[in-house]
Structure formats: structure tokens, C-alpha cells
Amino acid sequence: MWANTGSSQKSLDNLDTSYLTLECDILIVGAGGAGMRAAIEAFDKGSKVILVCKSLLGKAHTVMAEGGIAASLGNVDPEDNWQVHFSDTVVEGQSINNWRMAELFAKEAPERVLELERYGALFDRTDVGKIMQRPFGAHTYRRLCFVGDRTGLEMIRTLQDQVLKRDIPYLAETDISNIFLSPSGVVAGALGIRIGTGELILFKCKAVVLATGGCGKVYSVTSNSWESTGDGIAIAYRAGAELMDMEMIQFHPTGMIYPAGVRGLLITEAVRGEGGILTNVNGERFMEKYDSKRLELSARDVVARSIYSEIAAGRGTPNGAVYLDIRQRGPDYIKKKLPSMYYQFLEFANIDITKQKMEVAPTVHYQMGGVRVDPETCETSVKGLYAAGEVACGLHGANRLGGNSLSDILVFGKRAGYAASDYVRGCGDVELSQEDIQKEIARILAPFRITSGENPFELKERIAQTMWKYVGIVKNEEDLRKGLDQILLIKLDSKNVQAKGTRAFNQSWVDSLSVWNMVLDCEAIIRSALERKESRGAHYRSDFPQKDDANWLVNIVIRQKDGQMNLDRIPVPKMPPEYEKLINRDEILLWKKSAK
Image (cartoon, rainbow, N blue to C red):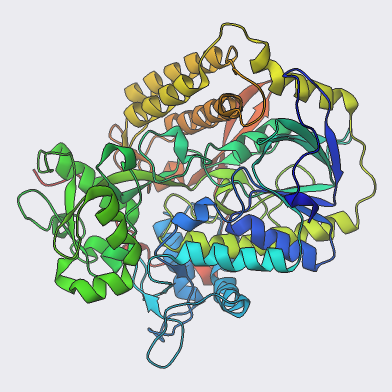
């Protein structure tokens, strides 16, 4: 396969503006679950596809989704159906979800899981041979289809096999910097960097599918891998696409707390799904105070803030954590159901979770906001530009249910690939501006022209520390203003960022480009958080602690106007009356302050 071959270019001058040109119908940016599923769909519909990823093929952040895929198969609880899954998704999204996305998602998730099984995924089984399903936080029924606690890894393995089986061309370690539009405003191409050689690649294409994931690495404590710097969000915004719900950042309740090198590493919700209990330093099962009905399986925003409150009240461990205990399940059960967690703690922390308690604290995990898309096609407000998975928004509202991310990327990855393929079939030749190409090349080579500038590694650290300090689980006007001031200062400094060394495998160059994307994402997050003067789902304001449906049942949309971020409040699309009846609003649990 041509995509596996190395570059014929042996060396590059740092300011060499030459580039290789590759042509396709659809460029798919990101090779996690959404990107690979989109590539499979578009290829099967006859489109010429190129798949690119910032890391290695098969090494996507999807593998960190360990606990399961949410789909109402009803294999364990026959009462489950798409209507209940729809209701759970909207209720826990605090009613700012796009109802049509939630409907399509809940209806199509079961078939996407069965399709994955036909592709060769090896799920855990019930006694009668059906796909096993486990409970997860805020799901009415046992709904998560799983492979131990390695579900995301199995999904990636399975989809990768299908990509290779079809001989779909792919380029690993390739970083896309920007998308080009034709004079008429439709997608015409993109520019990328071959990280291993420093070579520039121009992709001439008629459509782009963004499947780049979220921006968790803008925070210092996160479960996200190094690639998650919000590149797709920034690329879409610069191309003219709309962003939405950017204030909605999910803090997963349970991340590792030590050693320092793995702080924030995910402890799957499957631990709680399989019976794990949370206690404070006094041995109290504190979730009884915050959600006496669902306890440890309450919504993620509720559990995360409850843990935060226990630690803030002085009931945390000396390491600034709480305890998660699964020992009562017994060694054999734990090693069978949670093998990754067993080895993760044993290898990193020298803790045997069959005999010892885990110390856990919240970690940034997922971004509900992102690029605004059409529910049916995943097309953005830019013609020919599509987005699927975590980079897109609308499905999860103010809080994502555990397990919904993996079914999300299957459902909307397929839809994006299908719609993009339909679009390019009816699309004529598109014109690509040489002036735009040269302008972008000059922009991304600028760090090599700086002789005494800012260190990109230090800027990334400043960004991450600023966001963790001022834009955390509990927010307020004063902190958000301070955070915005700091991010805007970093934005100014980033104009003078410097890349040292040659272009091949130059991490300082890749990080320089990432910094520009990260500061854009952070500005959007903070401005949206300042705008929403209420508490809803993952967005909690201590100065506005109540949910306010009268004024804030809206989505905050960001558009670029005259080089500035322009925020608008858009009423949440009203769902049909028959779907309104599916929503039991009494079940929406508002988080309250912890008992003194």
C-alpha cells in the first residue's frame, strides 16, 4: 500500500516550501473509531478515500474507552429499548441535546454493535451465548456491551482489520494543519505534515471528515492521550464552521492519583458498574448523601462533584483523593472482568486491587461540545466539511452517559462517511487557490523563522495549568475572567513560538502548531462558560448554582466574525410531543451542595 511507504525525500531545508500532492474524493482526519468507520462506509460506497492520523494506526484515544458500548439490545434486561436509551441520553444531557441526534443514535446503536460483531469483535457472552451487557452510571438498564475492560481496544482492532482488508490508503504520523476552501466556499483540500520526514503534503479533495477527538490535553490532569489537543475543532473554526456547547467539559469521577507520571489515567466506570464502592478517608460511603438512589452509578457530573466536595471538605486521603474499593468481588471475578485495571494498578502503583483499595480523583475525560453538525449527515456549516465523534457536538448535551461515546462514533462515523460519499458523487471539480496554499505553508513554517522565541513545551504547560486552576469542576466569574486573561496572554506569546532543529520528527514543531489550536479551543471554552450563567450538567457555576430552564434552555453557538469569536444563544430544538412524553423530568437529578 502506498501509504505505508516512506518518503523519497531524504532531507528538507527548514524553510523549504515544496510539497507532495495527493488526490482523493474524501480526506478523513483521525483514525479512531469514528474515522475508521467513516472510511469503511465511504470506501464501500465507491469513494476514493485517504485516512490520516496524527499517531499510529490502531493507536487512537478510542482505546481508552474501556467499559463498554451502550446499545439497547436487551440481552440482559429485556425491558430495554431505544426509547429508554433516548430518554436516558436526553435526561442526563440536561435537555440541551439535539433530540434528532439522540433519536438516530438510540435507534441505530444496536445494529452498529451487531455489525461490529459481524466484523469479528469478540464480546463477553451471557450463558446462552448473547452479547453480555453490564450496568453503567445513569443508565436505566444494563446496556453496555463489553470486552472485559478493553472494549475500546477491541473496537479499534476490529475496525482496523476492516480498513486493512479493504486496502484503504492511510498515512500515519501525519498532522493536518488546515483546510482549504474554493472561491465559492466549499471544501477543496487540506495541508498536512508528515511528522517522520517533515515533508508537506497537499491533499486535493472534495470533502473532509473530521474525526480528531476532543481537547482534553488543554488540562493538566486528564485521561486523554497526547494527540487530544483539539486540532479538529480549531481547524473547523478557522474554516468558518460553527462551534457549540464548548463550555461542557466532562470530568470523569475516577482517575489515578499517583504516581505523578500517570496522574489522571482513567479508571473505567466499569469498576463501579461491577460493584465498586466509593468511600472517604473516614470510611463513609459518601454517595449516599448525594444520590441515595443510584449511589456510585449516578451521572458522571454528580459523582465527580461529589468526590470534589469530599476532598474539599477535608475528607479526602493525604494524596487528595477518595477510595474506590472492589475487593468484595473477589480475585477471580476482578481479574476476569477488570483485567486491565488489575494490571494497570499493579504495574504503575504497585497496588493489588484484589487486596487493596484504589485512590481516585476526577480527571478531564470528554468534551460534549465541539463542531456543530447536521444530525442526519454530520455536515458542518461549511459545505463539504463533516465531523463525527468527540470533535462534533449535539448528541450528549451537558453531560455524556458512560458508554455512549463508543456507540456515538459507530453511528455517526457511518453517517458521516455515507453523507460525504453522497456529496462528492454529485460534486464537480473544485478550485484550489495557490495563494491560500502558500499562505498556509508560510504560517506553519513560521516557528523555524523565529531565532529567539517562546518554548512550545512551556506554553502547553502554561495552558494546561491555567485551565486546571481557573476552569475546573467548580467555576465562577472571577476565576473564569482570570483564566481568560491568562489564555489571551499565552495567545499573544504563541505568535512568537519557536521550533528548533530539523523538520524530521520535530516535536517542538508539532507542539507549536498544537499550541495555536489549544489557545483557540481554550478561549472558546472560557467565553462559553462565562456566557452560561447557570449550572447544568458538567457546567457548574458556584456563583449561579441552580439550573435555569426559563433563561438557559439554549445552546451557545460560536461563529467567527471579523477575526473575533461571536457568541449566540440558540434555543434548543423542540422535540415532537410524542418524544417529550418519553422524558421523565422528575428523574433529572440536580446536584446540591454537600452536607456540612
